[in-house]
Length: 223
Ligand SMILES: Nc1ncnc2c1ncn2[C@@H]1O[C@H](COP(=O)(O)OP(=O)(O)OP(=O)(O)O)[C@@H](O)[C@H]1O
Image (cartoon, rainbow, N blue to C red; front, side):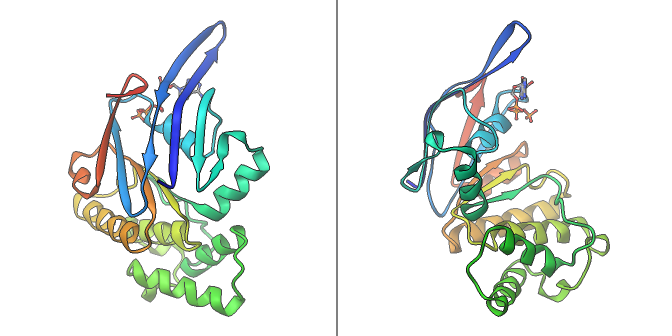
């Protein structure tokens, strides 16, 4: 198991009132598998995903990743692990408007502190764009890409640095049904071939067919 949490708690304080949003979550993620997180609005899915991804701190509990304890690390150590070993896909692609598809990926490699040479980086970027079916549009700017194409580039960007974990927060929410199936097929294939542990939040029942495991959240706990 590359990633585990033990008894994760999250409490938000608004004024005098403390609200318990996560009430003891034990989550484990396996390489080569998509784990889907479902549940009613407000059940704590996004909170859990952002805590697992090191984007916000838990109020209690432990998170272990690849032999280290994230919950015992400082901000800088967590930031480094996030840049090198985690990938993110969101509901909207969040591409940089003034960068071409290939430049988006090159920037990601740079941010991740890739040890590859310039030439090797270009080769890696070509390979990734090819694997998401976007090699022919590598010099295109986001404005000239369709919604589905943008999300493909965003997925390629999320995995170009070969992360071990991929966090996907409603990756198909802005796409129509056909495009959603294409994008999920792609995420499934990449999760398997690159042996990534993928955690996905989704509201779309149809997309659960692509998950290896489905976890339902209810009131801050696994149902
Ligand atoms: N920063 C915050 N401060 C206070 N309360 C918060 C904060 N973030 C989330 N919450 C509360 O925590 C609860 C869970 O929110 P979360 O976004 O995790 O739910 P969710 O299951 O992802 O919902 P949705 O499906 O609607 O996205 C909600 O009641 C929300 O209002």
